[in-house]
Length: 261
Image (cartoon, rainbow, N blue to C red):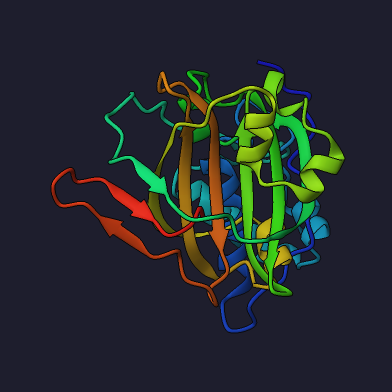
């Protein structure tokens, strides 16, 4: 595994003054490590580099790194960079949840592309595509606005042979399922689960939130008629919005949503 990749992009981070700063730095780094973004790398930042990158004191960065080390996420050695020792587990394939069908039209979102490139993908996305954590996939992160307000951020992950064919013009204006269909793929179904989580800085900054804020996160896999995965998606929903209304068919156990999320 190569160790000379570019690090996760440095983002400006808005901190919550009501939450200890070292705890927010810890949460930010822990999320990147848990997603496998620092796997097998040799350039994880030390105290001073981290302090300069985030505009914080060395004392604050040291406290966050000490906690990560104490919990087994990194190893610290005097005179050397910290070493990430946590390795995301490669989850075994498991039966998916009930299929979710979206019966209504897409909201007329406007899009702002925050990132579109092939690079180290979240470990869960790699697992879905049958790859090992630390590998590369094409990724697109877009802010979605609705009625003039920031609604959500979508993080789409696809095989490079698919994702790298999308043009900048398309990403600026079109929902991703439409782009997949435009390439000749049949989008047959999606599977979705919901949870509450902290988001990466690129998301919180785009939504006008702090790194300490938690939000509803939908993790989605999009499948073709043969149940092959076309893409893995995380959607981070602004706390001011609700998810679309859903209905369960008690005879089949399947869910339908009033609109795609």
